[in-house]
Length: 105
Image 1 (cartoon, helix red, strand yellow):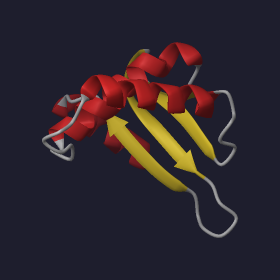
Image 2 (spheres, rainbow, N blue to C red):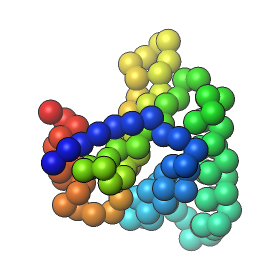
Image 3 (spheres, rainbow, N blue to C red):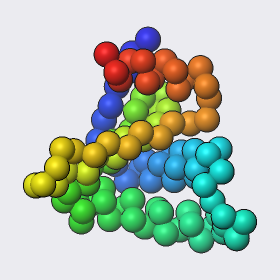
Image 4 (tube, one colour):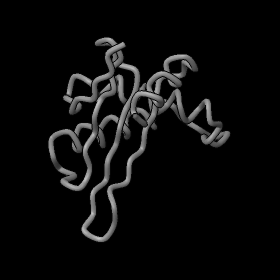
């Protein structure tokens, strides 16, 4: 098992949106008025801007398992606090457990 984290590129925008939408739906955090098309458009635009370095305090990365993209890592860095990390994974329990175990070691 080979786990890799690489900086996201513009080619990853749709995948990153898929991961965030799938994870948020699975967590039941969208309201009943959730509009996936509208959310996806906004999220993809924010992702493009972030990748093109228009958000210098935020880094987006793709988590890969055996060269297959399985998740997203977002890191916020500020002068006042420790970096804040947010992991999101494709909705596959076996992959999630393997990835989280590997990232924690």
